[in-house]
Image (cartoon, rainbow, N blue to C red; front, side, top):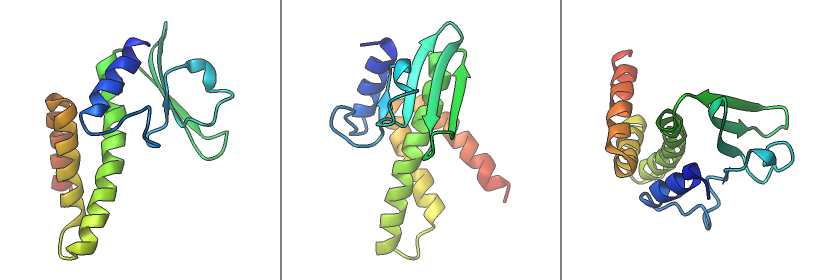
Length: 137
């Protein structure tokens, strides 16, 4: 098991995600699977160019390959995407029971809770980004 895989598996367990059992997120840590294995939609690996976070779209031609100079920068983006998706689902379900609730406020609060459970410094970074989003309105 690579360092990246060990770290991601352990940190996602902090928010109740077991990559061995849960259907989301579908992450592979083997770069060789990108060209042939569409059972996964996210890949993370390290090579001489840096740390890669590759995402595949619905169609084979849709993908992104972001390269980061360090693992923490990559993991922040990975966890931001994962926690955003979870928090969005949470806010939607919450809104059905509490229609007066502000969707984004509920979503942002939940995302910060999740990020704080993974790494408090990631939650602080995201808090600054959210503040900028809300100030821009």
